[in-house]
Length: 432
Ligand code: ATP
Image (cartoon, rainbow, N blue to C red; front, side):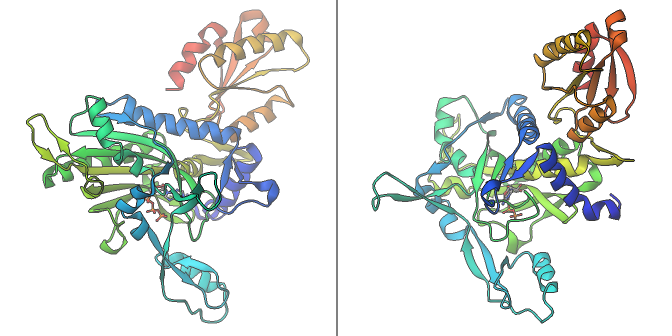
């Protein structure tokens, strides 16, 4: 990415997201709610496609992984046993000049803030700040119980470990996958959706025998699987890297931790963590496993913990291209919100509209299809390029004679004539 493009890329992405309906600020008409975001029509589709692809590769195509969907609200004992009440903290410091609060471990953010003051900045000493979000459950005021919204979705898997083992035929090594919302009282939400207070995770907990060699093998295996998944969906290799956690930054449950990072305009940033959690969680919940030979042990866990919102942001940043005055989102076809857009050349010609409508309705059986009959064809192409739609189909006067349409490719802007009856096969081939 060249430096000119990089410097204002975030602004362009934020503006594009709002303009085209990918992402809006949460509760915007009431002045917003810091750290929350709402996904619009295009964003909801993109998010769904990311989650579907993750589920397909992690659960559907594997014999050794099953999925669950656990409750967001959990008994507070879970968080006490898992160590989150005690240790799910970030170090908070306050600027002594303006009293703004920051995370002491985010040195770049601290340095950036110091530049905003002319005087030398003094900081309070770091205080542990717990990130769990509290809620109150129950109908009688005063008798409500305090609960915590889940700060990571992981615990929903661990508390169901025995249920899954006894209700399915899984045998170690095996994994339990889950996607869903998590909530954190982040000290410094920011960089658009990158650090939010409500976000979605996609996680795999993979249970293995508690042997060092097994731990290393599966840790490396999952690292490679996960980085390959992002590359296969189009993120450029040079924008991805692994970064191993230093001892002092490791989460309370982690034996080893490495992040997959993306080179965002605001610097290399984590969007998935690969963690060797050892037997930390199952031991904490007093859970174990009995193998076919009757041996009882506490399995170790290799975890892959990705953020749906951060991936989505990075897929957008990586796909953003400018080609003259054309903005193109070169999203992988599997992720593109709409796969095809169908246009009648002229909106006021009955025959063209009805032919285009037929094609639109037929294609809709298999995929998300956009319809546009406003303005001229050039404008419609531009609008679809910005939305990341891989193909546009135009029904013109020739269509009425020979039953062919123009298909235009988003990335090359090349057009070709395809017979209507061949469209379905054409797209199923091209959109793989
Ligand atoms: P960071 O230090 O950047 O806040 P983390 O190390 O606390 O992240 P993990 O607890 O490892 O993050 O969570 C796993 C994944 O969940 C992250 O890689 C990220 O994709 C996502 N995630 C975590 N916190 C947030 C957040 N506040 N907003 C959006 N996504 C998040």
